[in-house]
Image (cartoon, rainbow, N blue to C red; front, side, top):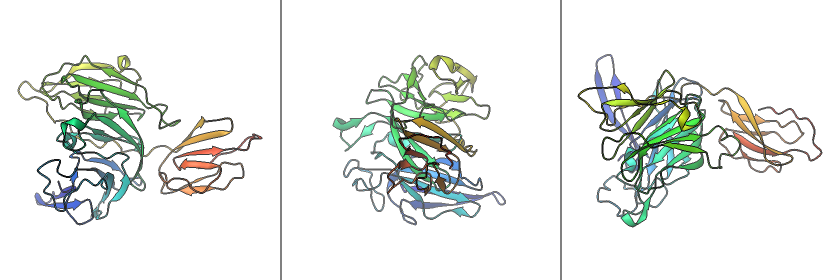
Length: 365
Protein backbone atom coordinates (compact mmCIF):
# COMPACT_ATOMS: atom_id res chain seq x y z
CA UNK A 1 0.00 0.00 0.00
CA UNK A 2 3.02 2.30 -0.12
CA UNK A 3 3.91 2.36 -3.79
CA UNK A 4 7.25 0.78 -4.72
CA UNK A 5 9.18 -0.67 -1.78
CA UNK A 6 12.53 -2.41 -1.92
CA UNK A 7 15.13 -4.14 0.24
CA UNK A 8 18.90 -4.21 -0.17
CA UNK A 9 20.64 -7.57 0.19
CA UNK A 10 24.36 -7.66 1.01
CA UNK A 11 25.75 -10.94 -0.27
CA UNK A 12 29.09 -10.41 1.52
CA UNK A 13 27.64 -10.60 5.02
CA UNK A 14 24.21 -12.09 4.21
CA UNK A 15 22.25 -9.14 5.60
CA UNK A 16 19.09 -7.40 4.43
CA UNK A 17 18.22 -3.75 5.05
CA UNK A 18 14.93 -2.05 4.37
CA UNK A 19 12.32 -1.64 3.31
CA UNK A 20 12.74 1.68 1.57
CA UNK A 21 9.32 2.91 0.54
CA UNK A 22 9.27 5.16 -2.50
CA UNK A 23 5.56 5.96 -2.57
CA UNK A 24 4.24 7.72 -5.65
CA UNK A 25 5.87 11.00 -4.76
CA UNK A 26 9.60 10.71 -4.23
CA UNK A 27 10.45 10.12 -0.58
CA UNK A 28 6.86 9.79 0.64
CA UNK A 29 4.52 6.94 1.44
CA UNK A 30 0.93 6.50 0.46
CA UNK A 31 -1.41 5.18 -2.20
CA UNK A 32 -2.01 1.71 -3.59
CA UNK A 33 -0.32 0.00 -6.51
CA UNK A 34 -0.62 -3.26 -8.37
CA UNK A 35 1.27 -5.99 -6.57
CA UNK A 36 2.88 -7.05 -9.84
CA UNK A 37 6.30 -5.51 -10.55
CA UNK A 38 7.96 -5.63 -13.97
CA UNK A 39 11.57 -4.90 -14.91
CA UNK A 40 13.48 -4.46 -18.15
CA UNK A 41 17.09 -3.61 -19.05
CA UNK A 42 17.72 -0.02 -20.06
CA UNK A 43 19.00 1.06 -23.46
CA UNK A 44 22.67 1.10 -22.37
CA UNK A 45 22.33 -2.35 -20.73
CA UNK A 46 24.02 -1.01 -17.57
CA UNK A 47 20.89 -0.95 -15.43
CA UNK A 48 17.16 -1.60 -15.33
CA UNK A 49 13.80 0.10 -15.29
CA UNK A 50 11.54 -1.21 -12.51
CA UNK A 51 7.89 -0.40 -13.16
CA UNK A 52 4.77 -0.25 -10.99
CA UNK A 53 1.23 0.89 -11.76
CA UNK A 54 -0.81 3.10 -9.45
CA UNK A 55 -4.38 2.11 -8.58
CA UNK A 56 -7.25 4.56 -8.19
CA UNK A 57 -9.13 3.86 -4.95
CA UNK A 58 -12.57 5.49 -4.99
CA UNK A 59 -13.41 7.38 -1.81
CA UNK A 60 -15.14 5.10 0.67
CA UNK A 61 -14.88 2.06 -1.59
CA UNK A 62 -13.15 -0.07 1.03
CA UNK A 63 -12.40 0.15 4.71
CA UNK A 64 -8.64 -0.46 4.46
CA UNK A 65 -7.67 2.87 2.92
CA UNK A 66 -5.20 3.63 5.67
CA UNK A 67 -2.14 4.73 3.75
CA UNK A 68 -0.70 8.14 4.49
CA UNK A 69 -1.74 10.16 2.60
CA UNK A 70 -4.68 8.10 1.31
CA UNK A 71 -5.50 7.81 -2.37
CA UNK A 72 -8.73 9.79 -2.39
CA UNK A 73 -9.97 8.44 -5.71
CA UNK A 74 -9.85 11.76 -7.56
CA UNK A 75 -8.44 10.10 -10.68
CA UNK A 76 -5.07 11.85 -10.59
CA UNK A 77 -2.98 8.77 -9.94
CA UNK A 78 -3.59 6.65 -13.03
CA UNK A 79 0.06 6.58 -14.07
CA UNK A 80 2.96 4.25 -14.77
CA UNK A 81 6.02 4.78 -12.57
CA UNK A 82 9.43 3.70 -13.92
CA UNK A 83 12.35 3.75 -11.46
CA UNK A 84 15.92 3.62 -12.77
CA UNK A 85 18.03 0.98 -10.99
CA UNK A 86 21.79 0.61 -11.50
CA UNK A 87 24.98 -0.01 -9.53
CA UNK A 88 24.44 3.19 -7.52
CA UNK A 89 20.99 2.15 -6.30
CA UNK A 90 17.37 3.11 -7.00
CA UNK A 91 16.62 6.58 -8.37
CA UNK A 92 14.59 8.69 -5.95
CA UNK A 93 12.52 10.30 -8.72
CA UNK A 94 10.55 8.05 -11.07
CA UNK A 95 9.73 8.68 -14.71
CA UNK A 96 5.95 9.11 -14.79
CA UNK A 97 3.81 8.35 -17.84
CA UNK A 98 0.09 8.38 -18.51
CA UNK A 99 -0.94 4.73 -18.30
CA UNK A 100 -3.91 5.24 -20.62
CA UNK A 101 -6.30 3.64 -18.14
CA UNK A 102 -7.27 4.24 -14.54
CA UNK A 103 -6.65 0.94 -12.85
CA UNK A 104 -9.69 1.07 -10.62
CA UNK A 105 -9.43 -0.67 -7.29
CA UNK A 106 -10.59 -4.21 -6.66
CA UNK A 107 -9.49 -7.00 -4.36
CA UNK A 108 -8.44 -8.87 -7.51
CA UNK A 109 -6.55 -6.00 -9.16
CA UNK A 110 -3.49 -6.36 -6.98
CA UNK A 111 -2.78 -9.91 -8.14
CA UNK A 112 -2.69 -9.22 -11.86
CA UNK A 113 0.20 -9.51 -14.35
CA UNK A 114 2.61 -7.25 -16.25
CA UNK A 115 5.32 -8.12 -18.79
CA UNK A 116 7.75 -6.49 -21.20
CA UNK A 117 8.37 -7.93 -24.65
CA UNK A 118 11.80 -9.52 -25.24
CA UNK A 119 12.77 -6.71 -27.65
CA UNK A 120 11.90 -4.09 -24.96
CA UNK A 121 9.46 -2.26 -27.26
CA UNK A 122 6.10 -3.35 -25.82
CA UNK A 123 4.60 -3.56 -22.35
CA UNK A 124 1.40 -5.36 -21.32
CA UNK A 125 -0.45 -5.10 -18.02
CA UNK A 126 -3.75 -6.74 -17.11
CA UNK A 127 -6.73 -5.58 -15.10
CA UNK A 128 -8.61 -8.27 -13.25
CA UNK A 129 -12.27 -7.68 -12.63
CA UNK A 130 -13.24 -5.14 -10.03
CA UNK A 131 -15.54 -2.23 -9.31
CA UNK A 132 -15.43 1.44 -10.09
CA UNK A 133 -16.89 2.52 -6.75
CA UNK A 134 -16.83 -0.49 -4.46
CA UNK A 135 -20.35 -1.43 -5.55
CA UNK A 136 -21.17 -4.71 -7.25
CA UNK A 137 -23.45 -2.76 -9.57
CA UNK A 138 -20.46 -1.33 -11.45
CA UNK A 139 -18.27 -4.32 -12.19
CA UNK A 140 -15.91 -4.01 -15.13
CA UNK A 141 -14.56 -6.87 -17.25
CA UNK A 142 -10.81 -7.57 -17.42
CA UNK A 143 -8.59 -6.11 -20.14
CA UNK A 144 -4.98 -6.26 -21.25
CA UNK A 145 -3.49 -2.80 -21.77
CA UNK A 146 -0.74 -2.54 -24.38
CA UNK A 147 1.85 0.27 -24.49
CA UNK A 148 4.95 1.22 -26.44
CA UNK A 149 7.99 1.61 -24.18
CA UNK A 150 11.15 3.66 -24.61
CA UNK A 151 14.01 1.93 -22.79
CA UNK A 152 16.15 5.08 -23.19
CA UNK A 153 13.91 7.38 -21.16
CA UNK A 154 11.58 5.02 -19.26
CA UNK A 155 8.50 6.59 -20.89
CA UNK A 156 5.32 4.76 -21.93
CA UNK A 157 2.85 5.52 -24.70
CA UNK A 158 -0.47 3.70 -24.35
CA UNK A 159 -1.63 1.98 -27.55
CA UNK A 160 -4.90 0.18 -26.80
CA UNK A 161 -6.90 -2.16 -24.58
CA UNK A 162 -7.11 -5.80 -25.66
CA UNK A 163 -10.32 -7.62 -24.65
CA UNK A 164 -10.19 -10.82 -22.64
CA UNK A 165 -13.20 -12.99 -21.84
CA UNK A 166 -16.51 -11.17 -22.16
CA UNK A 167 -17.70 -12.30 -18.73
CA UNK A 168 -17.47 -9.50 -16.18
CA UNK A 169 -16.32 -11.98 -13.55
CA UNK A 170 -13.45 -13.46 -15.53
CA UNK A 171 -9.90 -12.86 -14.34
CA UNK A 172 -6.40 -12.61 -15.85
CA UNK A 173 -3.46 -14.01 -13.89
CA UNK A 174 -0.71 -14.44 -16.48
CA UNK A 175 0.87 -12.60 -19.42
CA UNK A 176 3.77 -13.43 -21.71
CA UNK A 177 5.10 -12.26 -25.05
CA UNK A 178 6.48 -14.70 -27.59
CA UNK A 179 10.26 -14.82 -28.21
CA UNK A 180 9.86 -12.72 -31.39
CA UNK A 181 7.72 -10.13 -29.53
CA UNK A 182 4.93 -10.40 -32.14
CA UNK A 183 2.51 -12.54 -30.14
CA UNK A 184 1.02 -11.92 -26.69
CA UNK A 185 -0.60 -14.55 -24.45
CA UNK A 186 -3.02 -13.93 -21.59
CA UNK A 187 -4.14 -16.62 -19.17
CA UNK A 188 -6.99 -16.64 -16.72
CA UNK A 189 -10.42 -18.00 -16.01
CA UNK A 190 -14.03 -17.40 -16.94
CA UNK A 191 -16.93 -16.61 -14.62
CA UNK A 192 -17.42 -20.36 -14.10
CA UNK A 193 -13.68 -20.68 -13.25
CA UNK A 194 -12.80 -22.67 -16.37
CA UNK A 195 -9.29 -21.99 -17.64
CA UNK A 196 -8.83 -19.92 -20.78
CA UNK A 197 -5.70 -18.99 -22.77
CA UNK A 198 -5.95 -16.17 -25.30
CA UNK A 199 -3.42 -15.47 -28.05
CA UNK A 200 -3.20 -11.96 -29.56
CA UNK A 201 -1.59 -11.61 -32.99
CA UNK A 202 0.46 -8.39 -32.91
CA UNK A 203 2.30 -8.96 -36.19
CA UNK A 204 0.52 -6.00 -37.87
CA UNK A 205 0.52 -3.74 -34.84
CA UNK A 206 3.02 -1.38 -36.46
CA UNK A 207 0.57 -0.40 -39.23
CA UNK A 208 -2.25 0.69 -36.94
CA UNK A 209 -1.66 0.34 -33.18
CA UNK A 210 -5.26 1.40 -32.50
CA UNK A 211 -6.87 -1.31 -34.68
CA UNK A 212 -8.35 -4.42 -33.02
CA UNK A 213 -5.76 -7.19 -32.86
CA UNK A 214 -6.78 -10.71 -34.02
CA UNK A 215 -7.03 -13.31 -31.24
CA UNK A 216 -7.93 -16.92 -30.62
CA UNK A 217 -8.73 -18.91 -27.48
CA UNK A 218 -7.86 -22.30 -26.05
CA UNK A 219 -10.67 -23.28 -23.69
CA UNK A 220 -10.14 -27.05 -23.37
CA UNK A 221 -7.55 -26.68 -20.58
CA UNK A 222 -8.39 -28.64 -17.41
CA UNK A 223 -9.32 -26.54 -14.38
CA UNK A 224 -8.15 -27.74 -11.00
CA UNK A 225 -9.08 -25.03 -8.50
CA UNK A 226 -11.59 -22.25 -7.99
CA UNK A 227 -10.03 -18.93 -8.89
CA UNK A 228 -7.37 -20.44 -11.15
CA UNK A 229 -4.65 -17.79 -10.80
CA UNK A 230 -2.84 -19.17 -13.85
CA UNK A 231 0.54 -17.70 -14.73
CA UNK A 232 2.75 -17.59 -17.85
CA UNK A 233 6.50 -17.27 -18.21
CA UNK A 234 8.82 -17.24 -21.23
CA UNK A 235 11.73 -19.66 -20.77
CA UNK A 236 15.34 -19.55 -21.92
CA UNK A 237 14.66 -22.20 -24.57
CA UNK A 238 11.98 -20.04 -26.24
CA UNK A 239 8.98 -21.90 -24.86
CA UNK A 240 6.28 -20.59 -22.52
CA UNK A 241 5.27 -22.48 -19.40
CA UNK A 242 1.71 -22.19 -18.08
CA UNK A 243 0.85 -22.96 -14.47
CA UNK A 244 -2.62 -24.00 -13.39
CA UNK A 245 -3.66 -23.41 -9.80
CA UNK A 246 -3.97 -26.64 -7.86
CA UNK A 247 -2.12 -28.80 -10.40
CA UNK A 248 0.99 -30.96 -9.90
CA UNK A 249 1.97 -30.23 -13.50
CA UNK A 250 2.79 -27.26 -15.71
CA UNK A 251 1.57 -26.91 -19.29
CA UNK A 252 3.97 -25.92 -22.09
CA UNK A 253 3.57 -23.81 -25.25
CA UNK A 254 6.27 -25.30 -27.44
CA UNK A 255 5.96 -22.96 -30.48
CA UNK A 256 4.79 -19.60 -29.11
CA UNK A 257 5.86 -17.60 -32.21
CA UNK A 258 3.29 -19.39 -34.38
CA UNK A 259 0.00 -17.64 -35.17
CA UNK A 260 -3.20 -19.58 -34.47
CA UNK A 261 -4.07 -21.58 -31.37
CA UNK A 262 -3.83 -24.89 -33.20
CA UNK A 263 -0.25 -24.13 -34.25
CA UNK A 264 1.39 -23.22 -30.93
CA UNK A 265 2.01 -26.79 -29.76
CA UNK A 266 0.12 -26.56 -26.48
CA UNK A 267 1.02 -29.55 -24.28
CA UNK A 268 -1.20 -30.15 -21.25
CA UNK A 269 0.78 -31.46 -18.24
CA UNK A 270 3.95 -31.09 -20.30
CA UNK A 271 6.16 -30.67 -17.24
CA UNK A 272 5.65 -32.62 -14.03
CA UNK A 273 6.50 -30.49 -10.99
CA UNK A 274 5.75 -32.50 -7.87
CA UNK A 275 3.81 -35.41 -6.47
CA UNK A 276 3.18 -33.45 -3.27
CA UNK A 277 3.09 -29.70 -3.87
CA UNK A 278 0.71 -27.94 -6.21
CA UNK A 279 1.06 -24.89 -8.41
CA UNK A 280 -0.20 -21.57 -7.08
CA UNK A 281 1.62 -18.28 -7.74
CA UNK A 282 4.81 -20.20 -8.28
CA UNK A 283 6.34 -19.22 -11.64
CA UNK A 284 9.48 -17.06 -11.55
CA UNK A 285 9.01 -13.46 -12.65
CA UNK A 286 11.95 -13.49 -15.04
CA UNK A 287 13.15 -10.37 -16.85
CA UNK A 288 12.27 -10.97 -20.50
CA UNK A 289 13.44 -7.69 -22.06
CA UNK A 290 17.20 -8.18 -22.24
CA UNK A 291 18.15 -7.39 -25.85
CA UNK A 292 17.93 -4.00 -27.54
CA UNK A 293 15.62 -3.90 -30.57
CA UNK A 294 17.47 -3.84 -33.87
CA UNK A 295 17.23 -0.48 -35.68
CA UNK A 296 14.58 -0.82 -38.37
CA UNK A 297 11.81 1.14 -40.10
CA UNK A 298 8.54 -0.55 -41.06
CA UNK A 299 6.36 1.26 -43.61
CA UNK A 300 2.59 1.27 -44.07
CA UNK A 301 0.61 3.13 -46.75
CA UNK A 302 -2.26 5.07 -45.16
CA UNK A 303 -3.53 7.04 -48.16
CA UNK A 304 -2.35 7.88 -51.67
CA UNK A 305 0.64 9.96 -50.57
CA UNK A 306 0.55 9.46 -46.77
CA UNK A 307 2.61 6.81 -45.01
CA UNK A 308 3.29 5.78 -41.44
CA UNK A 309 6.65 4.54 -40.14
CA UNK A 310 7.14 2.28 -37.12
CA UNK A 311 10.65 2.79 -35.75
CA UNK A 312 12.51 0.11 -33.79
CA UNK A 313 15.74 0.81 -32.02
CA UNK A 314 17.26 2.28 -28.89
CA UNK A 315 18.44 5.89 -28.65
CA UNK A 316 17.78 8.86 -26.36
CA UNK A 317 16.70 10.95 -29.36
CA UNK A 318 15.65 10.36 -32.95
CA UNK A 319 15.66 12.65 -36.00
CA UNK A 320 13.48 11.89 -39.02
CA UNK A 321 14.47 13.00 -42.52
CA UNK A 322 11.76 12.12 -45.05
CA UNK A 323 13.90 13.11 -48.03
CA UNK A 324 11.31 15.41 -49.61
CA UNK A 325 12.61 18.75 -48.37
CA UNK A 326 10.22 18.93 -45.42
CA UNK A 327 11.60 20.05 -42.03
CA UNK A 328 13.51 17.49 -39.97
CA UNK A 329 11.60 16.06 -37.00
CA UNK A 330 13.51 15.48 -33.74
CA UNK A 331 12.46 14.12 -30.34
CA UNK A 332 12.50 11.11 -28.04
CA UNK A 333 10.70 7.92 -29.09
CA UNK A 334 7.45 8.44 -27.25
CA UNK A 335 7.19 12.24 -27.63
CA UNK A 336 4.33 13.54 -29.80
CA UNK A 337 5.14 15.48 -32.95
CA UNK A 338 3.77 19.03 -32.78
CA UNK A 339 3.65 22.16 -34.94
CA UNK A 340 4.31 20.31 -38.18
CA UNK A 341 2.04 20.54 -41.22
CA UNK A 342 3.19 17.35 -42.95
CA UNK A 343 4.14 15.03 -40.07
CA UNK A 344 2.06 13.91 -37.08
CA UNK A 345 1.88 11.14 -34.50
CA UNK A 346 4.78 10.11 -32.26
CA UNK A 347 8.46 9.80 -33.04
CA UNK A 348 8.31 6.00 -32.93
CA UNK A 349 5.29 6.08 -35.28
CA UNK A 350 5.16 9.24 -37.42
CA UNK A 351 2.68 9.72 -40.26
CA UNK A 352 4.02 11.82 -43.14
CA UNK A 353 2.35 13.39 -46.17
CA UNK A 354 4.63 13.37 -49.21
CA UNK A 355 4.29 15.73 -52.22
CA UNK A 356 1.27 14.89 -54.36
CA UNK A 357 3.52 14.87 -57.43
CA UNK A 358 5.19 11.71 -56.12
CA UNK A 359 8.84 10.77 -56.45
CA UNK A 360 11.57 8.67 -54.87
CA UNK A 361 12.53 9.67 -51.33
CA UNK A 362 15.33 8.40 -49.06
CA UNK A 363 13.95 8.15 -45.52
CA UNK A 364 16.35 8.04 -42.57
CA UNK A 365 15.98 8.06 -38.79
